Image (cartoon, rainbow, N blue to C red; front, side, top):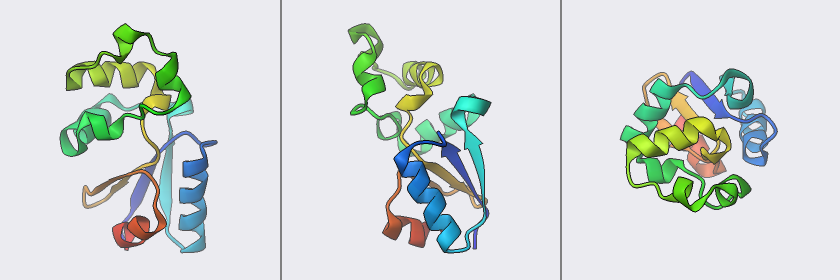
Length: 117
């Protein structure tokens, strides 16, 4: 079983589902809270390079809708990283990393099962 690190915002519904799943299946994890600890820029860049910034950014939530048209006009990874650093709620949750450098974005119980085991 992998050691996993879960990044996100504690009170997010998807995060609560991920925590509950891990707890119910005896999966140990380390949690990194964006609101308290900030977004680690180096990790954000790696995630964008690995998964693509478009898959990492939540463009359906209220934080996205509150951005100005200029802020929403993202055409590059570097601009996406800046906007996500300034608005951590834009990053899809959870982002899960394993000790083997595997990466999963979002919560789906079936995907979680195959990912962490």
